Length: 139
Image 1 (cartoon, helix red, strand yellow):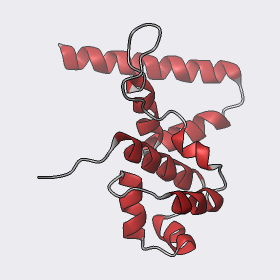
Image 2 (cartoon, one colour):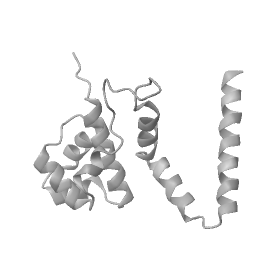
Image 3 (cartoon, helix red, strand yellow):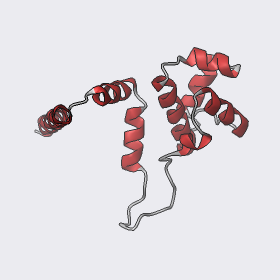
Image 4 (cartoon, helix red, strand yellow):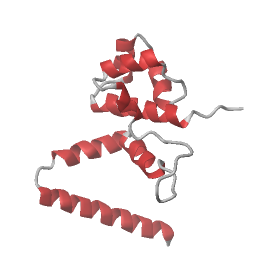
């Protein structure tokens, strides 16, 4: 039977990946800084292997973020919000997207646009494209 990663381990791993990519650091370089192979870093990032407290401290120093960074937006099990819905599904989608190369690239490029009017037009364009794509797949 194949073991599935714990949602918290996946979340922490995705935050490690996101910060590593933001810093333009390869898995190999992070591994070297931690005394690990890039394969071990891969397993951490996918949540296949848990990251212990001392290793998380090492990673946080290497990636220049506090250890709490890795738990920001983490899914909570059994906790409901005032509206009765469990937290996590939409925020996890955002974290998952920002953990991809495309998400980070889009985010970086968008952040470089200084003119608020241009940013608004880009947002409108992306929204229109998404709506058009959704209609095309429905019909």
